[in-house]
Image 1 (tube, rainbow, N blue to C red):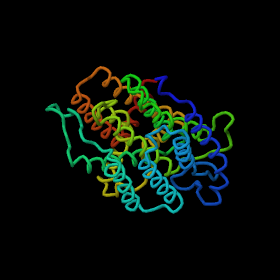
Image 2 (spheres, rainbow, N blue to C red; image 1 turned 90 degrees about the vertical axis):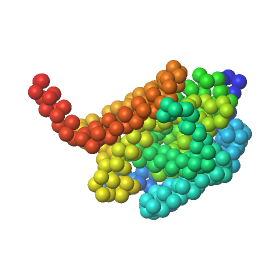
Image 3 (cartoon, helix red, strand yellow; image 1 turned 120 degrees about the vertical axis):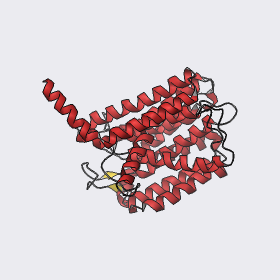
Length: 356
Protein backbone atom coordinates (compact mmCIF):
# COMPACT_ATOMS: atom_id res chain seq x y z
CA UNK A 1 0.00 0.00 0.00
CA UNK A 2 2.82 2.41 0.89
CA UNK A 3 4.32 2.03 -2.59
CA UNK A 4 1.09 3.23 -4.21
CA UNK A 5 0.04 5.80 -1.62
CA UNK A 6 0.81 9.38 -2.65
CA UNK A 7 0.20 12.15 -0.15
CA UNK A 8 0.55 15.14 -2.48
CA UNK A 9 -2.63 14.49 -4.49
CA UNK A 10 -4.55 13.79 -1.28
CA UNK A 11 -3.45 17.08 0.29
CA UNK A 12 -4.17 18.83 -3.01
CA UNK A 13 -7.74 17.50 -3.16
CA UNK A 14 -8.31 18.32 0.53
CA UNK A 15 -7.06 21.89 0.50
CA UNK A 16 -8.48 22.78 -2.92
CA UNK A 17 -11.90 21.58 -1.74
CA UNK A 18 -11.50 23.50 1.52
CA UNK A 19 -10.59 26.73 -0.27
CA UNK A 20 -13.30 26.40 -2.91
CA UNK A 21 -15.99 25.70 -0.32
CA UNK A 22 -15.13 29.07 1.25
CA UNK A 23 -14.60 31.24 -1.83
CA UNK A 24 -17.59 29.86 -3.75
CA UNK A 25 -20.10 30.82 -1.05
CA UNK A 26 -20.58 34.44 -2.19
CA UNK A 27 -20.58 33.24 -5.81
CA UNK A 28 -23.40 30.81 -4.96
CA UNK A 29 -25.57 33.69 -3.77
CA UNK A 30 -24.81 35.71 -6.91
CA UNK A 31 -25.70 32.79 -9.21
CA UNK A 32 -28.77 31.76 -7.23
CA UNK A 33 -27.28 28.37 -6.33
CA UNK A 34 -28.79 28.44 -2.87
CA UNK A 35 -31.42 26.47 -1.00
CA UNK A 36 -34.35 28.25 0.62
CA UNK A 37 -36.29 26.58 3.46
CA UNK A 38 -39.77 25.68 2.21
CA UNK A 39 -42.05 22.66 1.84
CA UNK A 40 -39.91 19.51 2.04
CA UNK A 41 -36.79 21.52 2.87
CA UNK A 42 -36.74 22.22 6.57
CA UNK A 43 -33.55 24.04 7.46
CA UNK A 44 -32.56 27.46 8.77
CA UNK A 45 -31.50 30.25 6.47
CA UNK A 46 -30.35 30.35 2.88
CA UNK A 47 -27.68 27.69 2.28
CA UNK A 48 -25.21 27.55 -0.67
CA UNK A 49 -25.50 24.49 -2.92
CA UNK A 50 -21.88 24.50 -4.06
CA UNK A 51 -20.49 21.50 -2.16
CA UNK A 52 -20.67 19.21 -5.18
CA UNK A 53 -19.04 21.71 -7.52
CA UNK A 54 -16.19 22.24 -5.05
CA UNK A 55 -15.60 18.50 -4.65
CA UNK A 56 -15.60 17.91 -8.41
CA UNK A 57 -13.15 20.75 -9.09
CA UNK A 58 -10.90 19.59 -6.23
CA UNK A 59 -10.74 16.04 -7.61
CA UNK A 60 -10.14 17.36 -11.12
CA UNK A 61 -7.33 19.69 -10.06
CA UNK A 62 -5.68 17.05 -7.88
CA UNK A 63 -5.76 14.54 -10.72
CA UNK A 64 -4.47 16.94 -13.36
CA UNK A 65 -1.77 18.41 -11.13
CA UNK A 66 -0.44 15.11 -9.83
CA UNK A 67 -1.29 12.66 -12.64
CA UNK A 68 -2.64 9.89 -10.44
CA UNK A 69 -6.32 9.07 -10.56
CA UNK A 70 -7.69 6.98 -13.44
CA UNK A 71 -4.58 8.03 -15.35
CA UNK A 72 -6.24 11.40 -15.91
CA UNK A 73 -9.05 9.63 -17.77
CA UNK A 74 -10.67 12.48 -19.75
CA UNK A 75 -13.84 10.47 -20.28
CA UNK A 76 -14.47 10.16 -16.55
CA UNK A 77 -14.05 13.89 -16.08
CA UNK A 78 -16.18 14.57 -19.15
CA UNK A 79 -19.00 12.46 -17.71
CA UNK A 80 -18.51 14.01 -14.27
CA UNK A 81 -18.56 17.55 -15.70
CA UNK A 82 -21.86 16.85 -17.45
CA UNK A 83 -23.44 15.37 -14.31
CA UNK A 84 -22.26 18.30 -12.17
CA UNK A 85 -23.61 20.78 -14.72
CA UNK A 86 -26.91 18.89 -14.79
CA UNK A 87 -27.05 19.05 -10.99
CA UNK A 88 -26.32 22.78 -10.97
CA UNK A 89 -29.10 23.44 -13.48
CA UNK A 90 -31.46 21.29 -11.45
CA UNK A 91 -30.51 23.12 -8.25
CA UNK A 92 -31.26 26.47 -9.87
CA UNK A 93 -34.19 25.75 -12.19
CA UNK A 94 -35.70 22.54 -10.72
CA UNK A 95 -35.62 20.56 -13.97
CA UNK A 96 -38.27 18.01 -14.83
CA UNK A 97 -37.64 14.43 -13.68
CA UNK A 98 -37.86 13.12 -17.25
CA UNK A 99 -35.36 15.69 -18.48
CA UNK A 100 -32.90 14.74 -15.75
CA UNK A 101 -33.35 11.07 -16.57
CA UNK A 102 -32.53 11.57 -20.25
CA UNK A 103 -29.37 13.48 -19.38
CA UNK A 104 -28.33 10.85 -16.85
CA UNK A 105 -28.63 8.14 -19.48
CA UNK A 106 -26.41 10.27 -21.71
CA UNK A 107 -23.77 10.44 -19.00
CA UNK A 108 -24.08 6.68 -18.44
CA UNK A 109 -23.50 6.15 -22.16
CA UNK A 110 -20.19 8.02 -21.91
CA UNK A 111 -19.13 5.58 -19.20
CA UNK A 112 -20.37 2.38 -20.87
CA UNK A 113 -19.73 3.01 -24.57
CA UNK A 114 -17.09 5.72 -24.78
CA UNK A 115 -14.96 4.68 -21.79
CA UNK A 116 -15.78 0.98 -22.22
CA UNK A 117 -16.29 0.75 -18.47
CA UNK A 118 -19.29 -1.55 -18.43
CA UNK A 119 -20.53 -4.73 -16.74
CA UNK A 120 -19.57 -7.86 -18.63
CA UNK A 121 -20.17 -10.44 -15.88
CA UNK A 122 -22.42 -10.70 -12.84
CA UNK A 123 -20.55 -13.69 -11.44
CA UNK A 124 -22.31 -16.85 -10.32
CA UNK A 125 -25.25 -15.02 -8.73
CA UNK A 126 -27.96 -17.61 -9.43
CA UNK A 127 -25.97 -20.76 -8.72
CA UNK A 128 -25.75 -22.17 -12.25
CA UNK A 129 -22.41 -20.76 -13.33
CA UNK A 130 -21.09 -17.34 -14.26
CA UNK A 131 -23.61 -14.97 -15.85
CA UNK A 132 -21.90 -13.31 -18.82
CA UNK A 133 -23.88 -10.45 -20.32
CA UNK A 134 -22.14 -9.87 -23.64
CA UNK A 135 -23.61 -6.91 -25.53
CA UNK A 136 -26.50 -6.76 -23.07
CA UNK A 137 -23.90 -5.55 -20.55
CA UNK A 138 -23.88 -2.12 -22.20
CA UNK A 139 -27.60 -1.60 -21.65
CA UNK A 140 -27.55 -3.18 -18.20
CA UNK A 141 -24.75 -0.79 -17.22
CA UNK A 142 -26.83 2.20 -18.33
CA UNK A 143 -29.62 1.14 -15.98
CA UNK A 144 -27.21 0.50 -13.11
CA UNK A 145 -25.44 3.84 -13.51
CA UNK A 146 -28.68 5.82 -13.60
CA UNK A 147 -30.00 3.80 -10.67
CA UNK A 148 -26.97 4.44 -8.44
CA UNK A 149 -26.89 8.14 -9.35
CA UNK A 150 -30.52 8.50 -8.31
CA UNK A 151 -30.08 6.33 -5.22
CA UNK A 152 -27.48 8.74 -3.83
CA UNK A 153 -29.51 11.71 -5.00
CA UNK A 154 -32.62 10.44 -3.20
CA UNK A 155 -30.83 9.66 0.06
CA UNK A 156 -29.49 13.22 0.32
CA UNK A 157 -32.16 14.47 2.73
CA UNK A 158 -30.51 15.49 6.00
CA UNK A 159 -27.12 16.94 6.86
CA UNK A 160 -24.30 14.46 6.45
CA UNK A 161 -26.35 11.58 5.10
CA UNK A 162 -25.26 11.41 1.45
CA UNK A 163 -21.70 12.40 2.38
CA UNK A 164 -21.55 9.98 5.30
CA UNK A 165 -22.96 7.10 3.27
CA UNK A 166 -20.46 7.85 0.49
CA UNK A 167 -17.65 7.84 3.04
CA UNK A 168 -18.70 4.40 4.30
CA UNK A 169 -18.78 2.99 0.75
CA UNK A 170 -15.43 4.53 -0.23
CA UNK A 171 -13.69 3.38 2.96
CA UNK A 172 -15.08 -0.12 2.35
CA UNK A 173 -13.65 -0.04 -1.17
CA UNK A 174 -10.26 1.06 0.19
CA UNK A 175 -10.30 -1.81 2.68
CA UNK A 176 -11.11 -4.34 -0.03
CA UNK A 177 -8.36 -2.92 -2.27
CA UNK A 178 -5.81 -3.38 0.52
CA UNK A 179 -7.02 -6.87 1.45
CA UNK A 180 -7.01 -8.01 -2.18
CA UNK A 181 -3.49 -6.61 -2.67
CA UNK A 182 -4.73 -4.47 -5.57
CA UNK A 183 -3.17 -1.31 -4.20
CA UNK A 184 -2.54 0.19 -7.63
CA UNK A 185 -6.20 1.27 -7.38
CA UNK A 186 -5.87 2.84 -3.93
CA UNK A 187 -5.68 6.49 -4.98
CA UNK A 188 -9.08 6.59 -6.69
CA UNK A 189 -11.34 6.32 -3.64
CA UNK A 190 -8.79 8.09 -1.40
CA UNK A 191 -8.85 11.27 -3.49
CA UNK A 192 -12.65 11.35 -3.34
CA UNK A 193 -12.46 10.90 0.44
CA UNK A 194 -9.93 13.73 0.70
CA UNK A 195 -12.29 16.08 -1.17
CA UNK A 196 -15.33 14.83 0.76
CA UNK A 197 -14.04 15.46 4.30
CA UNK A 198 -13.90 19.28 4.06
CA UNK A 199 -17.47 19.28 2.75
CA UNK A 200 -18.64 17.16 5.68
CA UNK A 201 -16.93 19.59 8.07
CA UNK A 202 -19.01 22.49 6.70
CA UNK A 203 -22.18 20.47 6.19
CA UNK A 204 -22.18 19.05 9.73
CA UNK A 205 -20.83 22.25 11.31
CA UNK A 206 -17.86 20.59 12.95
CA UNK A 207 -15.96 22.62 15.52
CA UNK A 208 -14.37 25.57 13.74
CA UNK A 209 -16.77 25.31 10.78
CA UNK A 210 -20.01 26.43 12.46
CA UNK A 211 -21.97 29.21 10.82
CA UNK A 212 -20.85 28.23 7.31
CA UNK A 213 -23.42 25.61 6.37
CA UNK A 214 -23.02 24.25 2.82
CA UNK A 215 -25.10 21.63 0.97
CA UNK A 216 -23.70 19.41 -1.78
CA UNK A 217 -26.82 19.96 -3.88
CA UNK A 218 -27.96 17.71 -6.72
CA UNK A 219 -24.62 18.37 -8.40
CA UNK A 220 -22.83 16.79 -5.43
CA UNK A 221 -25.10 13.81 -4.83
CA UNK A 222 -25.14 12.91 -8.53
CA UNK A 223 -21.37 13.41 -8.84
CA UNK A 224 -20.80 11.14 -5.84
CA UNK A 225 -23.21 8.55 -7.25
CA UNK A 226 -21.51 8.57 -10.65
CA UNK A 227 -18.04 8.33 -9.13
CA UNK A 228 -18.95 5.41 -6.88
CA UNK A 229 -20.63 3.41 -9.64
CA UNK A 230 -17.71 4.17 -12.01
CA UNK A 231 -15.24 2.78 -9.46
CA UNK A 232 -17.39 -0.22 -8.53
CA UNK A 233 -17.85 -1.29 -12.14
CA UNK A 234 -14.14 -0.86 -12.85
CA UNK A 235 -13.16 -2.80 -9.71
CA UNK A 236 -15.56 -5.73 -10.28
CA UNK A 237 -14.86 -6.43 -13.95
CA UNK A 238 -11.83 -7.62 -15.88
CA UNK A 239 -9.24 -10.31 -15.29
CA UNK A 240 -8.13 -9.26 -11.79
CA UNK A 241 -11.12 -7.68 -10.04
CA UNK A 242 -10.84 -6.14 -6.59
CA UNK A 243 -14.17 -7.63 -5.52
CA UNK A 244 -17.07 -9.68 -6.85
CA UNK A 245 -20.06 -7.85 -8.37
CA UNK A 246 -22.43 -8.95 -5.60
CA UNK A 247 -20.04 -7.47 -3.02
CA UNK A 248 -20.33 -4.09 -4.72
CA UNK A 249 -24.12 -4.39 -4.52
CA UNK A 250 -23.95 -4.94 -0.76
CA UNK A 251 -21.66 -1.93 -0.29
CA UNK A 252 -24.35 0.38 -1.69
CA UNK A 253 -27.21 -1.82 -0.53
CA UNK A 254 -29.00 0.64 1.75
CA UNK A 255 -29.31 3.50 -0.80
CA UNK A 256 -30.44 0.96 -3.41
CA UNK A 257 -33.06 -0.57 -1.13
CA UNK A 258 -34.35 2.81 0.01
CA UNK A 259 -34.75 3.90 -3.61
CA UNK A 260 -36.42 0.63 -4.65
CA UNK A 261 -38.87 0.71 -1.73
CA UNK A 262 -39.78 4.35 -2.40
CA UNK A 263 -40.35 3.78 -6.11
CA UNK A 264 -42.43 0.66 -5.43
CA UNK A 265 -44.62 2.53 -2.95
CA UNK A 266 -45.15 5.42 -5.36
CA UNK A 267 -45.99 3.04 -8.22
CA UNK A 268 -48.57 1.22 -6.06
CA UNK A 269 -50.26 4.55 -5.39
CA UNK A 270 -50.29 5.43 -9.08
CA UNK A 271 -47.78 8.24 -8.57
CA UNK A 272 -44.71 9.01 -10.63
CA UNK A 273 -41.79 6.98 -9.29
CA UNK A 274 -39.63 10.10 -9.66
CA UNK A 275 -42.03 12.33 -7.72
CA UNK A 276 -40.31 13.82 -4.63
CA UNK A 277 -41.89 13.34 -1.22
CA UNK A 278 -41.06 13.24 2.49
CA UNK A 279 -41.28 9.49 2.99
CA UNK A 280 -37.63 8.54 2.75
CA UNK A 281 -35.84 6.57 5.42
CA UNK A 282 -34.58 9.68 7.24
CA UNK A 283 -38.10 11.17 7.22
CA UNK A 284 -39.44 7.98 8.79
CA UNK A 285 -36.82 8.03 11.55
CA UNK A 286 -37.51 11.66 12.38
CA UNK A 287 -41.30 11.26 12.31
CA UNK A 288 -40.83 8.32 14.68
CA UNK A 289 -39.31 10.74 17.18
CA UNK A 290 -35.56 10.66 16.52
CA UNK A 291 -33.60 13.88 16.18
CA UNK A 292 -31.84 14.62 12.87
CA UNK A 293 -28.51 13.68 14.47
CA UNK A 294 -29.86 10.43 15.89
CA UNK A 295 -31.49 9.63 12.54
CA UNK A 296 -28.19 10.27 10.76
CA UNK A 297 -26.26 7.98 13.09
CA UNK A 298 -28.87 5.23 12.90
CA UNK A 299 -28.95 5.24 9.09
CA UNK A 300 -25.17 5.38 8.78
CA UNK A 301 -24.83 2.45 11.18
CA UNK A 302 -27.35 0.54 9.08
CA UNK A 303 -25.42 1.42 5.92
CA UNK A 304 -22.20 0.28 7.58
CA UNK A 305 -23.86 -3.03 8.49
CA UNK A 306 -24.70 -3.63 4.82
CA UNK A 307 -21.07 -2.88 3.90
CA UNK A 308 -19.78 -5.22 6.62
CA UNK A 309 -21.97 -8.03 5.29
CA UNK A 310 -20.58 -7.47 1.80
CA UNK A 311 -16.98 -7.36 3.00
CA UNK A 312 -17.46 -10.47 5.15
CA UNK A 313 -18.96 -12.37 2.23
CA UNK A 314 -16.00 -11.36 0.07
CA UNK A 315 -13.36 -12.32 2.64
CA UNK A 316 -14.99 -15.64 3.54
CA UNK A 317 -15.68 -16.35 -0.14
CA UNK A 318 -19.34 -17.07 0.59
CA UNK A 319 -20.92 -18.27 -2.68
CA UNK A 320 -22.16 -15.42 -4.83
CA UNK A 321 -25.62 -16.93 -5.21
CA UNK A 322 -25.98 -17.08 -1.41
CA UNK A 323 -25.06 -13.40 -1.15
CA UNK A 324 -27.39 -12.50 -4.03
CA UNK A 325 -30.49 -14.32 -2.79
CA UNK A 326 -29.82 -13.06 0.74
CA UNK A 327 -29.83 -9.54 -0.67
CA UNK A 328 -33.10 -10.16 -2.52
CA UNK A 329 -34.72 -11.61 0.59
CA UNK A 330 -33.58 -8.62 2.65
CA UNK A 331 -34.91 -6.28 -0.03
CA UNK A 332 -38.33 -7.91 0.23
CA UNK A 333 -38.29 -7.69 4.03
CA UNK A 334 -37.12 -4.07 3.87
CA UNK A 335 -39.90 -3.17 1.43
CA UNK A 336 -42.59 -4.84 3.56
CA UNK A 337 -41.36 -3.01 6.66
CA UNK A 338 -41.32 0.34 4.86
CA UNK A 339 -44.85 -0.20 3.51
CA UNK A 340 -46.12 -0.93 7.03
CA UNK A 341 -43.71 1.19 9.04
CA UNK A 342 -46.30 3.34 10.84
CA UNK A 343 -48.30 0.32 11.90
CA UNK A 344 -45.13 -1.31 13.20
CA UNK A 345 -44.05 1.84 15.06
CA UNK A 346 -47.50 2.16 16.62
CA UNK A 347 -47.36 -1.48 17.78
CA UNK A 348 -43.87 -1.01 19.24
CA UNK A 349 -44.93 2.13 21.09
CA UNK A 350 -48.00 0.36 22.46
CA UNK A 351 -45.90 -2.62 23.54
CA UNK A 352 -43.35 -0.33 25.21
CA UNK A 353 -46.10 1.58 27.04
CA UNK A 354 -47.69 -1.70 28.16
CA UNK A 355 -44.37 -3.04 29.48
CA UNK A 356 -43.76 0.19 31.40
